[in-house]
Picture (cartoon, rainbow, N blue to C red):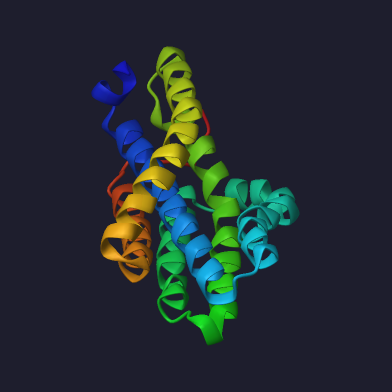
Length: 193
C-alpha cells in the first residue's frame, strides 16, 4: 500500500477506478431488481448480466489501439462523463420502458471497454520506479474483485434503503467523481518511458 500513500497520482487513479467499479455493481443489483419486478422473467434477468459482459467480449479488440492512440486522461474523463449522461436512461426506465434500462447499460458497458485498459496502461507513466509499478499492479489487480463484492453488497443495501432511482443516481455520481479525480492528475498518462 506504500505507493498509494506516497504517489498522489496513483492514489487518484486507484480511487477513481474503484469508485467507478463499485458504482457499476450498485447499478447491477438495482437493475436486476427492476427487471425482475417489471417482467418477472428470469430470462430477461439473465440478459442484465449479458448487457454487462457482452460489450467487452465484442469490443475489447479495439480498446487497446484506442488507448494507445488517444490521450488516456481525455479518454477516461470523456467516457466517464458520457456514461454518467447515459445513466439518465436508467432513471426513466419502468415496466413499459424496460428496454431503456438495457440500452443504457449496453452503452455504458460498451464505453467502459476503453476505460479499463486506459487505467492500466497509464500506471507505468504515473509511477516513479519499477517497485512502485509492481506495487500498483498488485493493488489494482486485487482491488477489482473486492470492489465488485463491496459494490454489490452495498448496492443491495443502498437500493433497499433509498430505492432504485437513488441507486442509479449514485452510479451516475460515481462516473462524475471518476472523471474529476482523473482530470486532477497533471502528470502525463501517455508519455513513453
